[in-house]
Length: 162
Length: 73
Image (cartoon, rainbow over all chains, first blue to last red; front, side, top):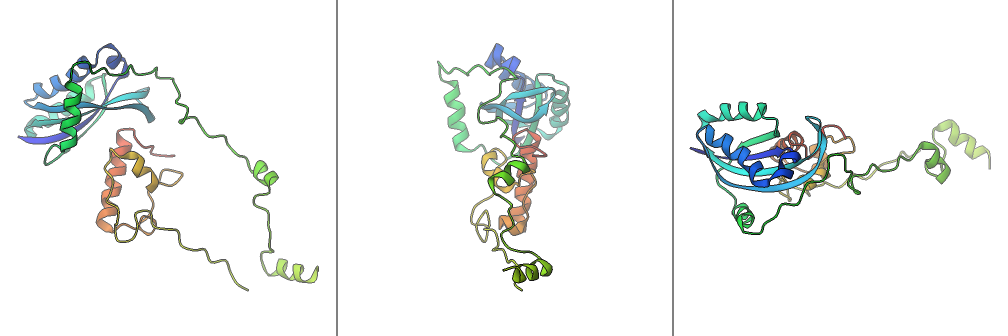
């Protein structure tokens, strides 16, 4: 049995329904292929850097799983076919980091509530596109103004002019 | 005639790999190793050794795969 770290991008529609149900998607897939989830926690809910399967936002689930290497291709195939898992990344690790164990335990405490993910088309204020500054604006502000002559001809002309 | 001589840009990770390579999960730290087009800076700019630069490349590629970082900025 080998220890793996898995990062799973879950569809926000499933997370909105029930967080435990969303976690169970990964746990069921792993157990089906002869593995077991050691710890899992909500890593983040954020806007994606690019659209994945037509979604702009997703919830990240970070899980540490123990399973035999033979079960991994089957798990990968199942995750590829699942519509509720947008993308995944599975890496082999030596051990579970101590902070991860603490964070996963904090999620198990009674009263832990996962915030409802926003709608897919919600744009965060900080993620708003910066205003495009045109070359005309820069020229109007005085940027890119030639302060000294460039080239021998221009230098000679500048020497003669004063 | 004197030509413009620009001072070399500072190395992002310091000299001799002072800062360890961030993991793919620490994508905010990885962002400073990318230019405006989301391309990874060269070793000359990052200041990493060959091994650390390879680790940086791997971390950025993993972060791109899971949608933390863009492929094209």
